[in-house]
Amino acid sequence: MIVRISTEGQYEIADSDIPELNQLDNAAVAACETTDEQAFHDAFSRLLELVRAKGTPVPDDELFGSDIILPPPDVSLEEAKTEFQGDGLIPG
Amino acid sequence: MPGLSGRMSTVVKAKISKLLDRAEDPSETLEYSYQKQIELLQNVKKGIADVVTSKKRLQLQEEKLQQQVVKLDTQARQALAAGNEDLARVALERKNVAQTELQSLDSQIAQLEQQQEQMTASEQKLRTKIEQFRSKKEVVKAQYSAAEAQVRISEAATGVGEEMADVGLAMQRALDKTENMKARADAVGELEASGTFEDLTALGSGDDDIDRQLKALSSTSEVDADLAKMKAELGPGGPKGELGAGSDPAAGAAQAAGEGGGPSPEQGQ
Image (cartoon, rainbow over all chains, first blue to last red; front, side, top):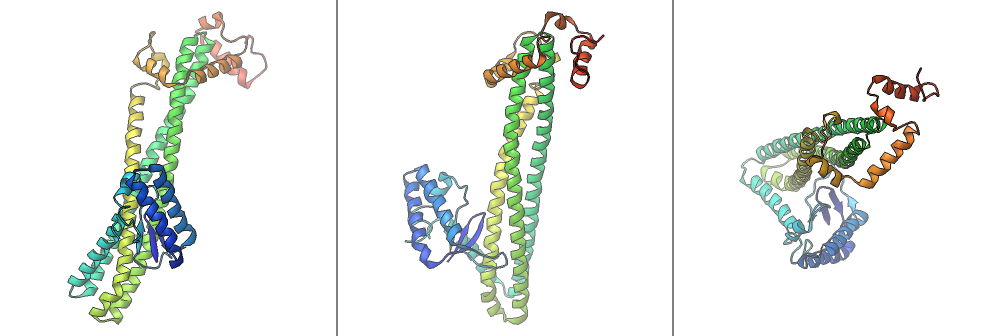
């Protein structure tokens, strides 16, 4: 699965890492629903860390569309609210 | 995928496939798409130039403030040597404000520096991707039928389209931040123009509005510490009444000679 961190780049993520990603995604949605700034930033930064740590950067000369696009690392809770709704960025 | 990000990639994909579908000759669309990519690359370059301009502006302001700090420090010393502690205090208060402003300028310049680096890296990446798209496009045009070309190129087009959207987003965010800094830099510029950091010789006797604000702004303890330090540096022969009366330049000259020359600060001749 190809995941893009907006303004940063694309990473290839193994299917086995998706459940953990999905868990953090759902945590971010929950934090957005309750407008819990701290919880949102916790969940979102762990989500980014996971992608950076487990993912393999897609080389610059490869052209792929992303399966998931995450907001930029400096996203505010207000901006994020429009994205982290329902199922979040990752279905399920 | 209900989120905006999901939407974004969908919109990009839809736009591109629509473009490809509509064209009778995909190679024409490919050329058009490539031209658009080159255009965006130019925009990114312009964005980088904007950030550099803002940075230079802040750096210039920083230099000016640094000069003011030195000047106010000198003026405080002169005032103290002349026995005018009140004036010395005002000078130090202003120095304090200028120094605080300098610190915030420092961090803003560092932030712009980082933005410039990020955008330069993005430009590089986009350039590589566009180059990749160009070579794919040539291969597809040469080897495949119109129908096949559409299928072959759509993933590549999506990849470039998404990268372009992302660079655009990064640029927008960088420019928004730069705008905020510009507004702040303008405010400091106005403060400067209003004479806040200006020459103290022009200062009247009573406290004016600016002075009161400055006192509130600057940390008194820091000013006190500065004042005490200066007094100690001036030594026991420093803030005496007789020196205060001496507005003749010889006193200043003796002071200046003291730092470079012989160890006789008492009397010149």
